Image (cartoon, rainbow, N blue to C red; front, side):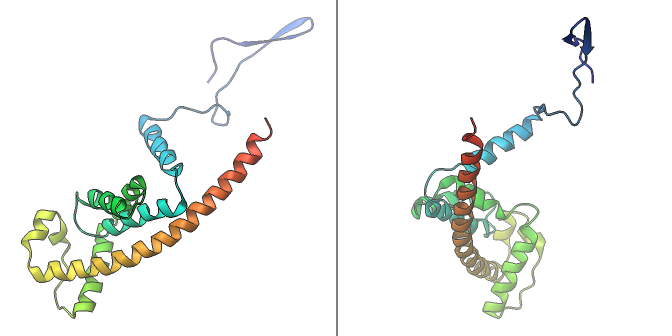
Length: 189
C-alpha cells in the first residue's frame, strides 16, 4: 500500500521521491482488533502479578481445585473463596478455574467419574447429558453425584498439589528469564 504523500530525499541536484510502503514485512505494528487488545491486556496483567511465587501458586492451586468440580457458574467464586482462605492470589485463582472450559469439561468429568467409580466400586454409568447444567446434575440420582464428587475431590486435590509446585517453578523461571531480558534490553539505552 502506498501513501499519498511521498517522502522527499534530496540527493544533490535532483530530488528523489520514495514512497513509504506498508507491507506484510514492515516493522510498523498494526493495532489489532479490540478482542486482541482485550486479551493481551489481561494476559499481561496476569503475567505481571505482584507477590511471592508461593502466594501466586496458592491462588493457582485454589483455582485448579475449584475448576475440577462440575459446579458451573460457581467455580470462579469457589476458587476466589479458597484463595482468600489459603491466602493466595485471587486473579491466579480465577485463571486456574479455566482448567475446565467448554472444550475440556467432557474429558475431565469423565476421568473424575471413573476415579470415583474405581474408589467406590460403583457400577453407575457415565452420561454426559447429566452434566449439561447444575440443575440437570441435581436431578440425577445420589449415586451418580456421589461417585462424581468423590472422583472430583481426589483428582482436584492431586491436581491442586501438582499445580502448586509446578506453579512455583514456572513463576520463578519466568521471573528469572524476564529479569535477564530486561537487563539486556534496558541497559543499552
